[in-house]
Structure formats: C-alpha cells, structure tokens
Image (cartoon, rainbow, N blue to C red; front, side, top):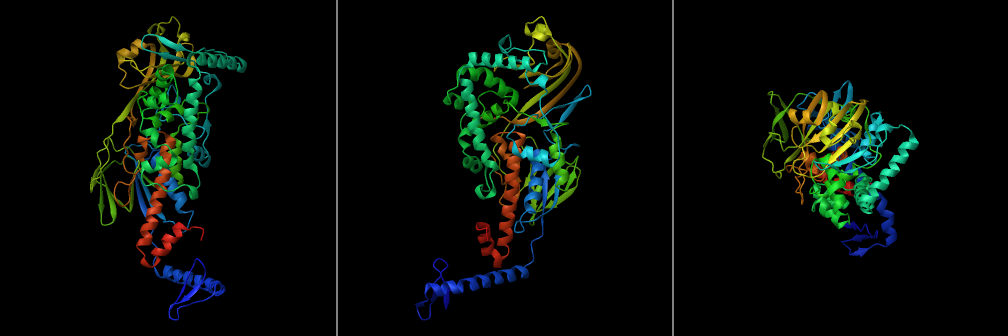
Length: 521
C-alpha cells in the first residue's frame, strides 16, 4: 500500500517499509491531486445539486429588505454558495419601510420615523448609489440652527442665531457659537468627539472584506470581534465619566442628544449612547422624498414576492419546512425563515417555542404641528427669541424631549416636530402654541429601552434556519446597524445552508469543509 505525505512530498510503501526520495514524491504529487479532483468531480456529477432554498422574511423595513438584498447579491457571487430561490416578505401594513416613514404637512414631506444617516453609514450610501436615489442634506438656512437647552422653567444655555442667508454672516455666527460652547463646556467637547471617533473606528470593521471578517452566530461574538462589547456593559454616563467628560456637559448637552435620538437619559447603555452622539455630528443626510425608498428599492431589485396587509400569527417547523400562517387564514412554507421586526410587541406563536430575553420598547410620540409657538410659554415676548431647536434636560415634569423647526413658511407660520415620551394632550399643545393650523400625531415603538449591562437575543432562534435580525438592536438601533445585522444574517444563512448541503452529501462532505477553509483552491 502506498501513501503520500503532503507536507514533505514523500511516498511511503507500507508493504516494503521503504520511503521513496523526496524527488519521487514531487513527481507523483501532481497526478495524485489530479486524480483526487477527478474523483470529486465524478462524485459531484453523480449527486443531485441541492435545490435553491426558499426564504420567508417577516418585516419590510431596512432589516428585512437588506436581508433580501444581501441574500440575492451573495448567493449569485460564488457558485459554491447555497443558492436562494423564492423570497417572500410579509408586511402587516399597506406600505413598506417599517419604522422609516414620512408624513405630509401643508403639502410638504417630512421624515416621521428614522430620519438621519451618518456620512460613514456605508451600507446606506451603497444602497443610495445602487438604487439611484438622491441624497438630501440640510439646507444652508437650516445648517446653522440655534440651540436652546430648556429645564422646564428657563433656558440654561442658548446659542446665537441669525436670519441672514449670507455665508459670511452664518460663518461668523457658527464661530461665535463654537466659542460660546467652549467657554461653557471646555475641553470636554473634544473628549466627547474622541469618544465617538473611537467607537466609529471600531464599528468600521464591519465593512471589512470577507477574508478578514468572519460570519457571526451571536450578537456577543459580533460585538467582541469589533471591540464594542464592553460599551454595552456600562451606562453612557459611566463611559463618559471614564473618558474625562465634565458633569455639566453630560447633564446638559449629552442629555439633550440622548433624549432627542433615543428618548432616554444618559443612563442608557454605552454603545447606544455613543451611536446617539454620532447622530448629532456634521455631514448628516437623508433620502430626498423619504428614507423608506431604500427599503422599497431593495425589495424591488431583489425580485421579492411582497405580501402587504399580511400579519403572521404563527410560525411552525414541520417536516423540514417552516409554515407561516397569517391572520387571514393563508399558509406559506419555506426552508428558511427570518424575523426582521421587533418581537417584543408581536403575538406570533412559535412551534417549537423560542426563548428570547424580555425587553421593553421605548415609545416615542412624534407630533407635527403647523402653526406658531407661544413665546410666553418660554418666557419671551417674541417668537424669534425661541431657538429653532429646543432640547430638554432630564427634569421631572418636562413634557417633551425636543421641539424643532422643520420649515419656516413665514414669521409666525412654521412646521414643527415634537418628540415626547407620552402623548401630547390638546390642552398642553394649546398652551405651548399660540396658533395651530394642523396637527399630526404618531406613536412609534421606536427602539429598545436601553439599560446596562445589555442582554442579547439569539441571532439563530432554533438549531435550524430561523433567524432574528433585530437581536442586534439591543446594541444600538439605527438604519445602518439594522443593515449591518442583516448583512451578517444573510452570510450566516448562506454559510449554514452550504454546510447543511455538504453534510447531506456524504461523498462531498470532506471536500466541502476543505473548500470553505481554503476557498483559494
């Protein structure tokens, strides 16, 4: 019997006990490898190729639409990956986009849900390019917003403002405000910037090429690999104290930002807080006409079968397939099921049952008003004295998180956006506004209620092919973090399907595992 040592190239004859010289091994190595590959090809041709897997996705927001996009994109990029067949997306409402939505006030369109994107949101930027969407940036007149921090009784800090459209004047006002901010908060401003930049530097690892970025089977594994996990074990306040920020900056400016972006105090977990602070920087953008167009475009170009007005009430695993039943009595089956919407306030019955940590969602009440604020409520005589962005401190009795001007139609005719933790009653709005021509209210189950240390739901809800995109939301909830989680879920699905296909074909099992480890072959 003859065997070959692949490390040194020697051929060993077990019958005679002799070892051939290294040169002979080199001569016989290439024909032997050719023979092995020929046998593997014969085995491959003799075994039927697995059928493309069908996928059911519950939720048409940025998470669900991104999963569909990445599944299509990656499954067609490599012939050895598992192939994806029909993709169905189920949406209980009549429109796609999930928590990305718009409202129309006085004939103008404004973001009602997820509103802003960061210049380093690379998935969103790529979606925008791919779908030929138009980037919308703040207008020049709105880029120098005046800010006031309200404690429920008075403005404890207020920046300068100017109605001039002159670039020189706006630059001067911006410089004056920078000086005023520095005089109040000092070097802590730079420490806050450095804190955010360190977080962003680690987050950018999720965009690395495949050969340097593994597929993750849990949120904890995903965060630890990027060096972000520790930020979820402490509150933002604790992280910022450790970073050397002053209590004044944390209690005022940082609190205003977290209340606006997440409707919560600085006691939210550190990573969510850092992401919130990043959302207050420069270069922010959105999609002209509404961010929901990203989800709609990804669904369209992914050749998805969309089921609007379809609410799934039960999901069962039966005989190798997932069976989804709607409230209307319709039934659908697929090999892979993906939950791309928060399970916290849904009533889907799973068989077998699943286990996820109990989690509360933070509701944000968004109120749009066209009219005019009452200056007397804020202690002023003129509307022009009220800052264009009124942020609030974490003070008992303050009824709103923020009030901002979306558009100025006239001196006493503006469109405002109000964030609050509770519904704004009519009598309160009548007190805050001197004029109200139009009022629209929206109640969003917007994001998790954050607390440290965070506990994460599984990405894989069973031992088979049931996945949960929104498990990552307990780290941070944004459009981009949903896309990052969705991209990993798509790779995880394809990786596990490939592994399952290999294990189901015994003759190719070893070759499949070797191929996955050494794809350069």
